Image 1 (cartoon, rainbow, N blue to C red):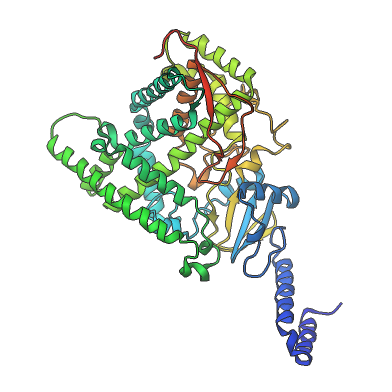
Image 2: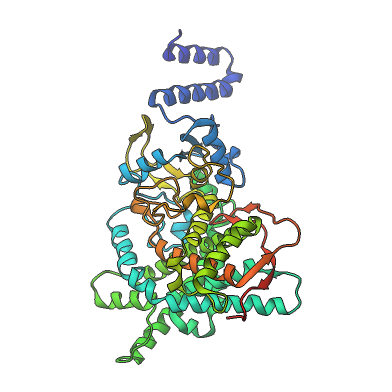
Length: 509
């Protein structure tokens, strides 16, 4: 067999004899060199990449479905090139455990993205910041000071109030004689209001609440845009899609609004010395800033607020939408859930958070929803900080590793009839979805050093809201419910849920 150097000599000899074929010859050399290099380093298997763009042209509109197809063809660990970036796709619990637990430290960082730079205060947040002392400090702040069990428990009445407000909104709209109610809009407003009150308390920004909602939803939409410059860096300066201009505009508007909100909080604190009032997350951050126990600037406060809203609102909203959709499509599951809730609270009153511990099937419904419709079907990419080996394959430094929670939840080797919505599969199983330490078959909140610090808050929001909505109403749709997805920060439904509600309780709460 001709050696690689001999092959190169032959190719350049051809160039000397026929200069007009030089471009084609050089391309052939590059492709052959890549093949030999790939075999030598033994990267995980994957589709053949083209020069410059790699496999970008093979990516469909819904990346999680493209990656799922790659996993089915190439196995639980696969590789591809997204522009100049080496991407690793993980689609099995064993490989996920290797990345998120065994070698967690190597894969705990995040790659550079325009979103983090231009919207999230140049990596001052928690979600997008690279791994290091700053991340450890800020994540500890979030989990110990802001989203601890005591704080979550103290917000119980807030969650119950907002859910009851949503229930009354559904009831009032249904009495207007409308054929159907847009449940998607109601769920979005419910989650937005809960998160805003968690962040900023009952003052609601002195009637600026709607302005804040509009601003932050624009931030959510902008953050979901695919930016070519993140994968082909030498094109980044051109900003061909206008993404960076849009991000800078959103950032400026959000920054101005948050500056006003922070000043309102400072004024309230100074004018309420000695008084007892309900404090929110911004109050807590400003108190830590004043105490000088940790370096927190106003930019840090704004970045954390933006994190909590973007990460919390759309993911919780879409999970509730998918749960309602699945229950509408599986009426027997819905009836079983209603029977469990009714056995605990009766039909004379609404569900309270203290009732939830007696509702195992409700928790199973939420878990099954997170399995089949994970809010983040591809966990935010992890970036390797050095060369390493996973399952015998070479993973180069600065690779972006994508954990496909979509593929995990739909793997027939892990789940019997995986496409069926069957909450019973979790009955009697003590599975901790929140911590993600030992169970890697489902990873809705990630795991390891980059696990979601707001997972407990999200789970509390989901169980109460879903339990209340299913207990208070029967839901019907005209025709067939469309279950298509759309691109976004989370796995969102393509179309809103239009439903006809029928009150089950003796009176509206």
